[in-house]
Image (cartoon, rainbow, N blue to C red):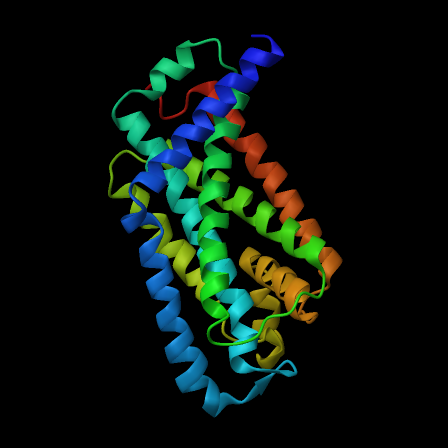
Amino acid sequence: MNRQQNMIALQTIVTKEIRRFMRIWVQTLLPPAITMSLYFVIFGNLIGNRIGVMGGFNYMQYIVPGLIMMSVITNAYSNVVSSFYSAKFQRSVEEMLVSPVPNSTILVGYVLGGVARGIAVGLIVTLLSMFFTRLGIHHIFIIIYTVIMTAVLFSLGGFINAVYAKSFDDISIVPTFVLTPLTYLGGVFYSIDLLPVFWQKVSLLNPIVYMVNAFRYGVLGVSDVDIRFSLGMITIMSVLLFLFSLRLLNRGTGLRE
């Protein structure tokens, strides 16, 4: 394929992915907005008043960046895992694999679809948060980079889950037993500086800690982890997962068995 044909193929996949989650917005965009609103009310207003100040900010301001990132992570992941597994289950993905479209274009198309949904939900949650607290912008470029790369990273994670999944139950195992615990233990609702030294070190093994803290630094200017190290970790993990995902697609793992 020449470059123009490749771009048309990429645009087609991305458009299909965006139309898919926009067509069922009641299932894809509305539930996260309602869930995050409940977090704002319960954790921010009710519990936050008793906790007081954290990291130099009131509790609501402190947790909002983490909640925004949580919505980006879960929605980028779920969009790709459900979409690609459905294509695999219906065997429509085989049509793309036998076409002249490069595997890298197929992978990037699905990832961009997940990024689009993650960012869309993140923007909705950000707008809702403004009804509960005031948000600033400490470093806009760190905010943009962190959101995009985090959405890319978990879109790739969703793709890998879909490749290995053999049933619809399999695509819910990782979000339930891996993604959710890592998110809640990723510093969304607290500063890891409050933990004993041993558990602080354990927390550094959680990749979500770096994403939440990088975004929190971009918004509030505070972070429990060195910002350069956080951005480096996000970048390295994204590159490694992309290469691994592309290798799975090239080998036909879970697709040609």
